[in-house]
Length: 130
Image 1 (cartoon, rainbow, N blue to C red):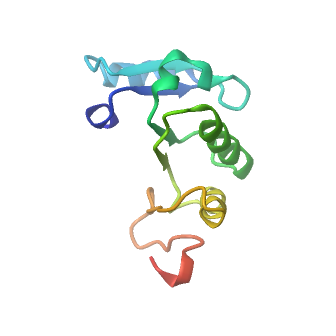
Image 2: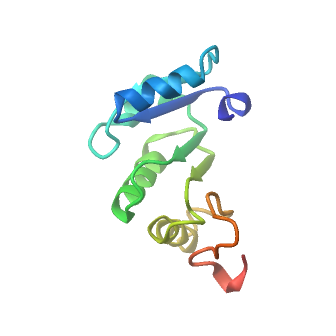
Image 3: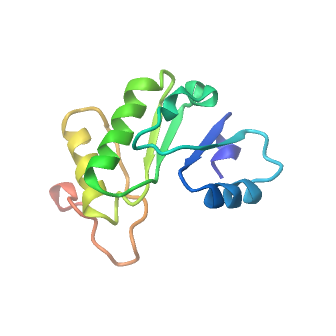
């Protein structure tokens, strides 16, 4: 769906099989690029399509350090970045912790949960707001 909203979408995945599945599901969409990379160690931000990225969708490893690293690298290396989507912000404590820390530092200024299960409380919700 992001390819209908943004001029260029780039998908990184360490798993060649999953990347091939994503590519097949997006057949015919010219604004989507697919790159096999390990975001934990590869300089994914150097991919040519990444330099034009206005949105970063983080949905890799969900442990705290990996989420923090992916966001830090995107914020540092993507010059046109305007939006960040973090999968499972509303469902996983480790992901929510990174997002809440960036909110408290003023790096992020507006966040809505994405990935919350029906009826499940949002972890680390501020002021009891859900």
